Image (cartoon, rainbow, N blue to C red; front, side, top):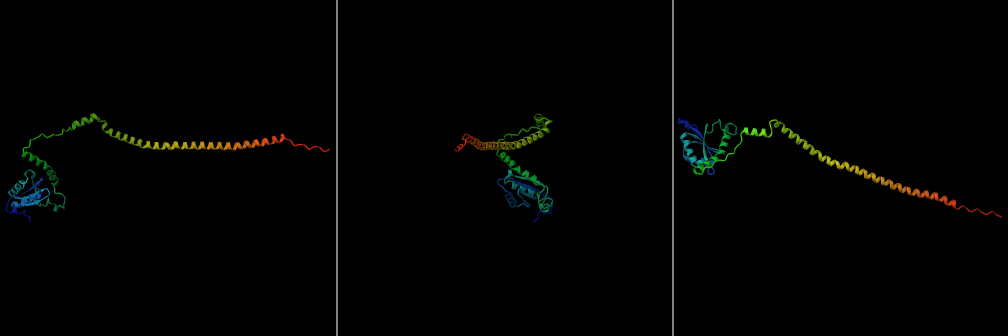
Length: 241
């Protein structure tokens, strides 16, 4: 049942307020149950962050006091310009999506825990301490520091030089291993050729020595044989008487 037209029948003005619950003890369901049991005539909508109440100012404010008494330092109230179920803000008539102003409300609710803790400390009369703020340098101080360290003329060229040096270094690093790997291959090939040449030369010399020795022996035998034959002439036969 829609109760938004009831206040209009009585000729009284209606208001809408958001009740944001940021408590470790109370949930939005607990706050809604307190509204139901209050007996005041208001329109209630329970949400993930709290409640949305619409009704006459007297009824809404009376219900808010009851809800805030559950955990006054962690339940906060905010005015809303549109009543509950208004088609200009209701997601049912806007094809879903986030309600306008939801992100702002979400950011505000995320800070309520710190505010509630501060209110608890205030009620407990905790001794105040000065907050330590970080001294951030101004833009003028940063500009002077940059000009002193790098200089205006080097601001644009320094990154380019650095990238060029990095490229040269990477290129040299990539080229060095290739040369080192290729060097042993080149030196190994002449070594193998020299070894084969030496072995071939020694083989040829051995072959020539082997062939020369039999040739000398054969030549010595041939020359020695005729000499022996000439040294021992044949006997002549004696003439017959």
